[in-house]
Image 1: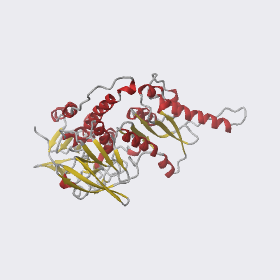
Image 2: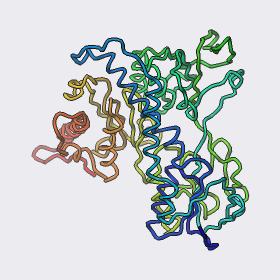
Image 3: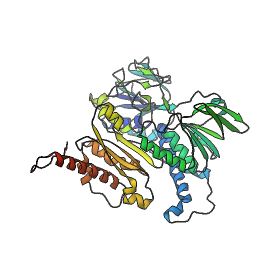
Image 4: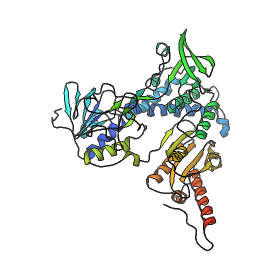
Length: 481
């Protein structure tokens, strides 16, 4: 294909979700767009992250439901046998199906110039890919991250898994050690436990999911224990060695040391940004090898021509910020806009069972910022549909500005929290308050009733408070925005 030597309006380095969404949005604005990807289109999310892990989690939930059929009035099937190759084959079929949505040929047919290879900045307005030099008016770096490889003595020699290669397994490990109690570690530990592995989960902090509310993390910890996972909190992994075909891992908590014998080790302790060998220095882009590229609230780097988004950035690592990032970059890079990341309402979810989802402020954050906050909570065992489904673990919390109906944030712990949080996220994005949530009509029975019930508790509290402060004969004010 003949390519013009004129500068591209937008050149994107990285063909993951952020890069693909931004490319499509820019093309829709009539821009000349180039996309450079050195590996597989779709990035980690499609190939080694969100999609394969959720496929595995769904099958693992099926096996758990079969084993617990009697709790729902059924009979547990006799002789439940795990067909691990079939589990992984289903995952690969799903991954391949979704990959067909954005093949390079389709992007090219739409008008996006796709380059396969490693991009390296040659200056403030150009990159080199192979023997080609591509110039740009604006650029987006969306190269994502890679798994952290902790410096545990003997780990490299013994061999281990990360999210980058765990989905290449052909046999389910009989004994599995998971290092890391963040979202990746917790999700995969639970999935493999439900598929039949004897799982030990090691976390060097006193609780899982350190950024989440403590009662949410405790509910997850209880759920993992019920799935048979041996939980080691406040525990360091201090060494690994091989014995025969297995591995022996040395653990330490306070002054107590012990060992655990396993067949596989899965490390899930976070990601590092992919900033190596990008030539960012030549482009005048400030970055740190650990924290990533520094961006401002407009997603601009220290080079005003170049933007960055996703796991490659410092402080903006959300696994699903792609849509927001695409809109912000296209508006700011191509149209001189001033759209801010801080203006976005971005929910997130850890897809364990129960799931833990959050949007907006936490109580600790509100207090740190001296924002007066009041929390209203409904437990899932008060919700009719959760009782019917046998999914009573969890709660809905709504954090509001004290004395008003303004929603500051929310945490949902439930079997389908990732779906439930969207109603609250939409309300916050639209500037709606508790009153709007109470007025929303919902089918009955659904688990989303928990949101309406929680909002109603908040409104009733406001009514009582306002009535007690009102003068006799005067109508109360309910503190709407």
